[in-house]
Image (cartoon, rainbow, N blue to C red):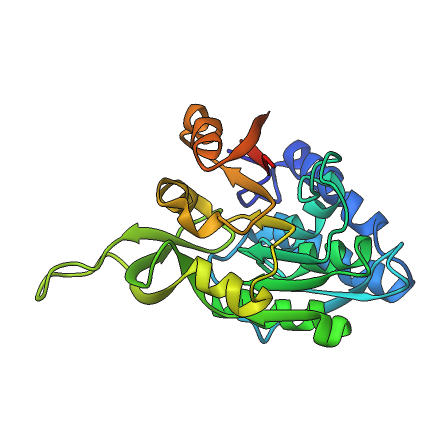
Length: 280
């Protein structure tokens, strides 16, 4: 059983202690007695009861984060939100050092609860941001977590695809959002998920930036990345692209190179990131 993903039985003392220690860093990353108490409760509930696939967005709790000017981060107990909070500190969401300035327009496809977009805004204070998140519950949290940015950040609750299309989506355990399962079932057949109207990614970017380039685009859209890159004309105005991938690892770099990027792959124990910088 995975300590990270599952519930730990309270009578399994060794596993219970290990799980608490693994998550204790989240408590250390918040400041103030109230926030530490709240985060401790989030951790204990997660360890004892496990995660829920789609926890209600009305059960949000605020914690005050160290090193963010005392700003609040909003999370849901028994969700992937605490893991999303921890993900900030691995810095996988940051652009490569080789990305030349200026960085004035940043977009995040699969913004989840908005923490990555907020952190990028802190690191690039002159940049405008676009956060795109199709999951309604995640989008509620994202609005909380980017609210301090005001007009600097545009949040769109929409699914992006390589063209306008009706897709079928589903929620899977341990996923951080909806997964694309394919096109809708034929008329009269049972659909394997919820239908969702997806929007052309190129149009979403141009609505945000006009004719100006997107300097950095972070893509975290679960398995949908592969079809998006296979039909990658929408990337033509993106200077730097970083994609979280879980499959087709050996194909990511050649696909980015075919789109005009100098690309590399960073493998991790749970997946990989493919990064491309457009060749001048």
